[in-house]
Amino acid sequence: MKRTLVLTAAAALLAGTFGFAKESTLIDFSLLKADILENEEGQAQENSRTVMDYSVAAGATFTGEQKSLMKTSLALPNWEVVLNSSARNVQSVALSQVVAAEVKRGDQPFVGEEVMGVRILFPTWNNNANAKIVPPFEIQAYEPLAEADANGDRQEPSEENKGKYLFEDGYGLIRNVGTIKSISCTTMGMNFPHQLYVLLKDQDGIERRYFMGSLLFDGWKTLQWNNPNYITEVRTREIRVYPIYPRGIPYVKFAGFQVTRDSRDIGADFIGYFKDVKVIYDLAVLTADRDIDDEDLWGIITKKEAARQANEMNHFGVKQVNRYIEKQKMATEDAFTATLNEDSASNAGN
Image (cartoon, rainbow, N blue to C red; front, side, top):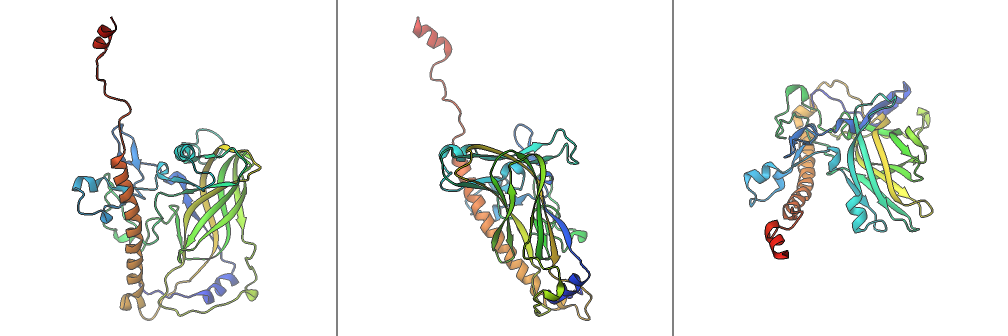
């Protein structure tokens, strides 16, 4: 981190004085279109920007060919629906899923793009139920930005991408986030009386949920959560001063949606569509030139981020390897092999 001064909440005083607030897109589902790694039918399976290789967590028993297939991404069909215990049964787990849904008509600027489509099978009896819509793996906060080739193999980061991270710019991660002022979600309502929450996770691993509102409307709408404790007057804010160096940059990452169904409301199938999630927030730190290049001299932040990245990849890889093993064990046959041909069966009948 060259010639960088990391100022903490004291610097936020200056930012607040001039009324600076930043809006960023946390995640845009239209960016997650599958565009690489085609299957036997010629359909792309993974998203090139977010593809991850989890073979690094696989054991030595796997062949090179098997490890080359151990890739996944944030492509929409890879997302999961996790039902709570009162809503989980064999049928609901099998039928609840996420797909890529193309917006074919309307007056929205994203017509022709693919958004997230979700089906959740809630119970029909009278009990509260909820479901989380989560990514196939936890979004990595310290994965460096690098291009991936057609086989999903990530290349070395280019000079222009150094210091940038893979999941920034609408792929699930925002860095340098202080106090969150507002969160918005663009979604298409289908007159369901269910409630929608946005789930975010911070640099301390703490997951919080934000109530966006009811889905009881028809058509596209932007739901918004406003922080009721946001202080606009700088003089009434609590100012905390921390050491200038070294500190990691605070961030938030997208952890998913949660849809809740009240016991009094209709159950059965829920269908929903989601375009994006945006955040308005205070900057956590300001940067300025320093007389001495602290990070170049000590390298403390670089070492911390490398350790966190290795830890994130290990947890992500073990889960995905176990799923790969389970997939290999699954039966692929749809029908029994015929013991008798049709002529033999016909002759036997005569």
